[in-house]
Length: 413
RNA sequence: GGAGGGAUCGCAUAGUGGUCUAGUGCGGGCGCCUGCUAAGCGCUUACGCCGGGAAAUCGGCGUCGAGGGUUCGAAUCCCUCUCCCUCCGCCA
Image (cartoon, rainbow, N blue to C red; front, side, top):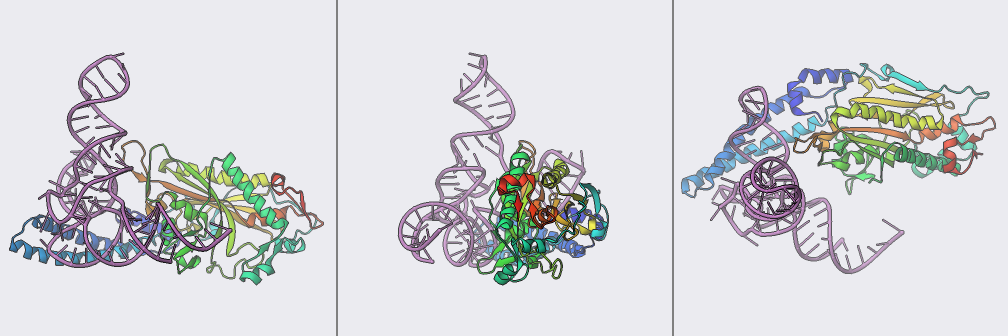
């Protein structure tokens, strides 16, 4: 959420940001509601002040005036409440402002590749896509998933399931032991409130699953739960930065991407992800973002799979982000770069929604923290990339060196 | 699922319709005193919004778990919700 005062005082900047993002938001309406709100607030305060003074007196005239005041105040309060609710709702639908340095652009075609590592291997045979490999090796069963739950579900069996578990453990261990993140186990069903904090609600409700009876929502990413870990807190001096990592299932309705990526298991309604999350002070958040991208890249390097890092242009930036880097891993079977991580600096956008602040020094004024999130990395796409890159001419798959301690085997055959 | 109890300032507690402009203790901060430490003494102690000011800051309003209601007036009475605790039932 943007600061209302900021919108008021920097209207042109906000409008330009929206244009750069190729997005819309009712800024005019917000400003007029805000003006109305402030006006009624000052008359309301005046009336309340009079009531306060009068309430000590017990004569009949004061009682009479008191009754008048009560009715006026009530009317104004009702009106103010309505305005406030409407204003908040509109405000929650305004996206974050991209940082100055973010490349301007309309679509993902305008994203900028900032670096790449490794080159796609030349195969002496035609590498198979994962859905064929998976079926031959009996480790990915898409039909079974469909039978159980419908389209966009799949079953991992035997070495496939083991490989996914090995990847998760390997990634967690790397981030915990080498990169300094604190491991967390999180609720994956959350309240609507938590999703407002992370910016998924109110705007993106149609991407989420929920249990209507209990009003629990299923998280689309661990970012939701992690954002709310310090909600409504003021972190004492010296606490920042905080690094957290979590492995959770993620649930997405994928309504908006119907018909996209229908082959294979690249895009499902349920998938596993290892998520990195940071709370930082505003001065260091961009540096922390660079480090986080580096931490995600560590995984690609250790798996010895070619990847590239892209900076997203303004038009492709997520709603809450001020700056984002995507990491794409090569998948020779489907012959494409798979997005396995998206690392974002959300600035104070989520912190304002979730009311997360820190005190820079003893006795100083509390200020909003910056929040950062990034996949480190997302399954099953890493699994796809592993089996497609490590496939051999005879259709077997070699296990990457770093995963051997986790799988206990060297080949999938 | 049932029955009961609770939520007040960083922590602990007082507060059953106006004197609450929320008291007290502890902790924290500043100062004084003091060979050092401890003790003692004095002052201080949250957050948000609106308005004034270049600013330090000043004025107002709101906030006693949250939201409604009753009343001239609510921490206090009523309703709804959330969370915590105790007991019973069920359960991995």
